[in-house]
Image 1 (cartoon, rainbow, N blue to C red):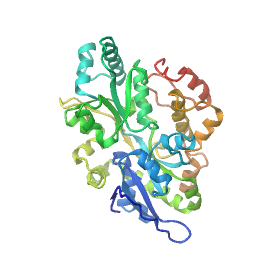
Image 2 (cartoon, rainbow, N blue to C red; image 1 turned 30 degrees about the vertical axis):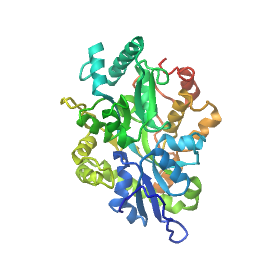
Image 3 (cartoon, helix red, strand yellow; image 1 turned 135 degrees about the vertical axis):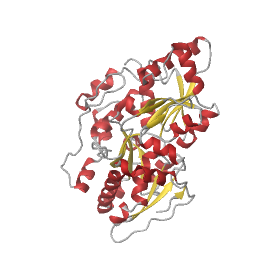
Image 4 (tube, one colour; image 1 turned 90 degrees about the horizontal axis):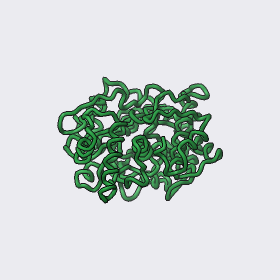
Length: 409
C-alpha cells in the first residue's frame, strides 16, 4: 500500500466483520522495516485478507505514543520497547506485546573521522582493528581528554530503551569506558545521525542501517563495530501490539504473523535483495540511495571514505535461524541490561513481567508450531567473553556490579 508520511491526524481504522482487517502500521525508515514494508507492498498481507497502511514516522517516542493512543494498530518497534512498556518504564508506558521479531542484525557504531584518527594517533590502531580494540583505543583517547581538561565526547543513540543504547553501552564498557561518567549519551533520531555527525553535534552514534553507511560514504564517519561484534543473537526490531487489541483481533493477529513470516522468508533470500533494495529506496519508504541499501543487505561495508572495507556475513537475518521467534531468553537479556544500567531494579517478578512481553505462544499458534518454538540457548559469544544463561539471571546481573559499574567486565 502507499505509505503515508507522518500525518497530523490519524484516520479511524476500518473494520470488516467481527475483526479488524484494515490495519495502520507505524514505522521508522530503516532497513530493518523491510519485512513490514514488503508485507504491505508485495501482497503478503493481502493474501491473508489484510490491508496494511504504512505510516512513516520520525522518532521512536512518536511510534510508542501513537500505538498507545490508538493511532496505530501495530508498530515497527525497538525490541526493548515492549519490555520497557510492560515494566511501566518511560514517559508514557502502555502495555505492549511482541508476537513477531522482524529479524536480527543491522546496527553499527560509527565514530567521527576526526575521533578515529585521534585513536590511531594515540594507540597505533590499525585500519582493520577489531571492535574490541577500537573500544579500548577510544578509552585511551577519553583518558587523554580528561587529563587535558577537555569536555566529554557526545555519542548518539536512538532511544533509552533500545538495542542501540544497550549495545553501545556494552561495547564501551568492554573497552573500559563508563557510559554514564566518561561520555555523554544523547538521543538522536536515526535519519538525523549522519548530519549531526557532520555538523559536529555528536562524536559518534549507534544506529541501524543504512545511516552508518550514509555517514561513511559522505566521508564524515568511520564504522568501528557492528551488532554481530557485540552479540549476534540480539533481536533488533519487533512488531508491537496493544494486548487488548490483540485479544479482540485474535484471527487478524494470526493472519498478520503468517503474512510477516512469508514476507521475512522472501526478504531473507539473496535472490530478492535487488528488488528489496529498489523497494526500500523509494522516498516514501527509506529514501536512501539504492546502492547503499544493496551493499547493506549484502553486509558489504565501506568503513570510511578511504576505501577500507569489511564484509559481515549475515549482517541482516530476516528469517533464518529462528530469527522471527520472540524468545523469552532474548527478553531476559534485554531486561538484564536495563538492570545493569540502573533503569529498573532486579526482582524475580520484574523478570517474569519482562519475559511476558515476547509472545512466542501467539507466534507458535499462528504458524502451527510446537508449544515452545524458540531456541532458548545462547550460543553466540559476547564481545567481552561473557555468556548468558537465563536460568542464572540474577547471578549474571550481579556480576556487573551496581549500576554505573558496567566497565568491570
